[in-house]
Image 1: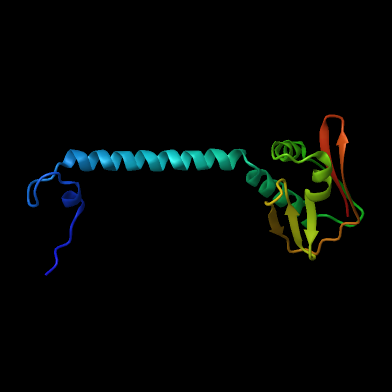
Image 2: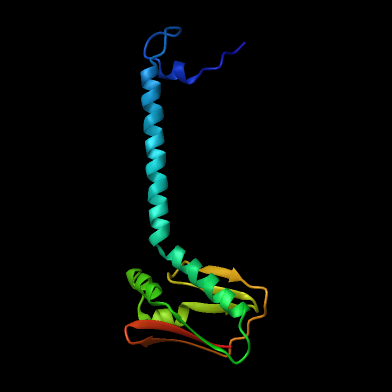
Length: 147
């Protein structure tokens, strides 16, 4: 019969069958826990300040706005933080004008602040935008949508 080897045998420094140094096992457990906690905190801090957060935020905001929109209405949305993120990814204002916002099919809103990223948000209502533009208004960048 094959015996299972447990953590205490792996960590034991003496001969097999001797007692286990539980202090070593506790230190390993604490170090693994600290590494896991640090990696989670790094992920959360990056996710909160990166383009993924703002892409999702703007896609959902624009999507819900378009679902409640009626024909003939105009909407303006301040996208200054999105331009700052795009500039931090070496993209200029012209790139943002061409690639920031798009509607795919009849009900998918896509927002993009990086060259290989983007967030898509599907809405229930058929989207019909007659005109869209991104322009500077003072020190703000504004996305204007005409439904």
